[in-house]
Image (tube, rainbow, N blue to C red; front, side, top):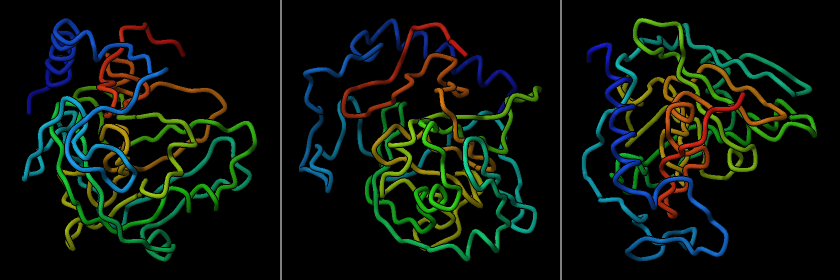
Length: 240
């Protein structure tokens, strides 16, 4: 992919904001989750509003797919925690492992159902780190960068959403190692939020007292990213 991928994505975001005012700066008060199909295990319509189901797994990234050998992989956990630490791959794989099946919802309007994952719950990482009482948010960083820059991929979410049971750091998909193009050897998944909230090639988790917007949140995507409310875009200026 060419180095102007991010610029082209931003133009796409601008066009979508102009076309779909109902997906911009969404207000949740008094609204019920929207979608179609039978209820999923969380009691929500299986297909969120504005989405269509696909059988394949499209690849979206910043324009690069870093090679991260398992022997060199590290996950750094820090910020407002009592026990900052860094995991090697072997240490990560020695943590309690879980298998789960969940759906994957991309902000670009496609959803893939019934993905079989294996990995470590984010909650397990948090319990090891022991977040301090003032830690209410997390910022996750990947090993990928905006082409031609030193700007890494980051994404943010409230801590209470990160510790949901189905938020995992996954290394296996459909009984195979997670493909490199999808963030292998390890990525985060956030099944009840749009998928960009789960960093591919994850390498760092920082616990914060205040929200800090991530890469796409700074560039026009919603900060809250709630699929069942069509919560895709934001027009507010970035505040650090």
